Image 1 (cartoon, rainbow, N blue to C red):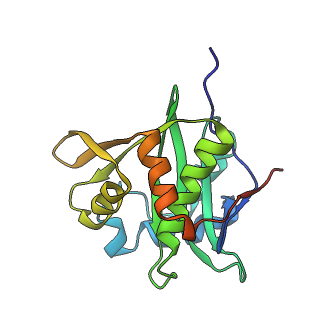
Image 2: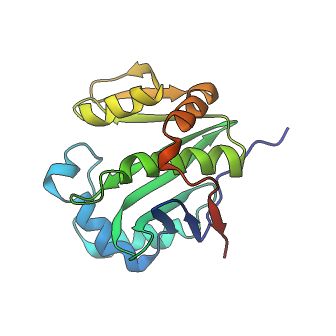
Length: 188
């Protein structure tokens, strides 16, 4: 049996935003998000050295079964955030590194989540998702739970979640006004 794998793609074009494959030239933007005090308190810590972020991105280019995207505004190319798909396990994928910069349009979070699910399910063939969220990040926990994610485990720091295909599809239907009728995927 062959299971789906996560594939890098050059661009995924949605309704108002674009996912663009992360490149070494994005290191400064990514580092600014990951070291911003308010946002980084719920993230795994990273070095504040630009060269370390560049090395991580250089290594990412060669990793299989992982996709790391810069979220941009569709019309102006303004950088809005990041999101990553990784850790596939049979028909389930994990997503995270989801950071939306302050001042981004309010719909960026929901549209980016819907695009992650649409790409993973409709283009790659995954059926479910799993991820973890820092317990103190109550807004993100509530966001995922509104989508239908279920807490399946926890440790001192984070909750582990899973979300079924049925719950993903239901949320995609409920929030369809935020999602393009079909994503445009541009490969290298």
